[in-house]
Length: 291
Image 1 (cartoon, rainbow, N blue to C red):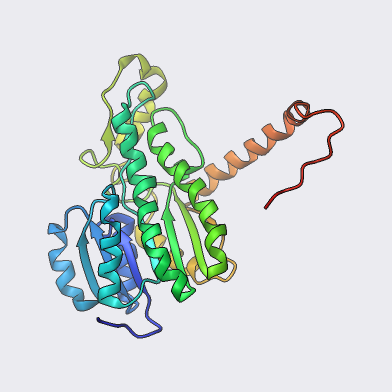
Image 2 (cartoon, rainbow, N blue to C red):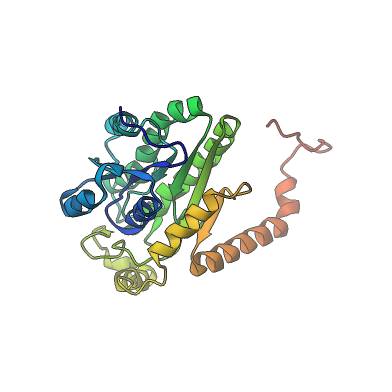
């Protein structure tokens, strides 16, 4: 078994050969840390791997293959002796209205953004619990807290990931394990490339509500305002904070959009509070929290 010095972290990063995953991997390697990077296609990363020697291990893995999650973790432990940070980053977007997105396409979003990450978390947790330390970074999206026409299937996976991860954070905190849910806005990655972004078959009847959104998603490639390298630096900084938040909106657009969504949500709760509360039996005392 290979080992690493105690102060150098070991990362597992899914989707590590491009985009935010690549930037996180490069930042870790530049800091002298070790990385296990996964991707479906590793051919384009051959020269990258040779440049970093034994501190970078590339493992072919489709995040939807939940049966292989244990193998990814086992290879990391065999090579480096431990895992300090798991980053669930792999996944793609999809554009299509509810009627346009088939069950198969909807399940694919859930496989990539919920079931795949969940399998890797389950596989790594015994090792992190034994070490009584670790961090799990769930790469969500501003679309994991808000949604709009034609991105519902993508948001379904990210909303699910966030709910699952919020519960996870409370479960693993007593073992010294932290969870960080990252909610990026648009970053200059391949996310919006026409050969990456998935498109459901188009029904013209929805053009009036989804046409502008489709055009915006297609036109964003190469002009996104977010810098992946700066994003990686922010994530690394937050992971070192003793008072790190559970959720981290990433990018100015995410800050603006999520601020608006939270404010609108609070206003709606306040507006309908009396009517909502009237559903209780008369005279009942406020319910006590059970947790």
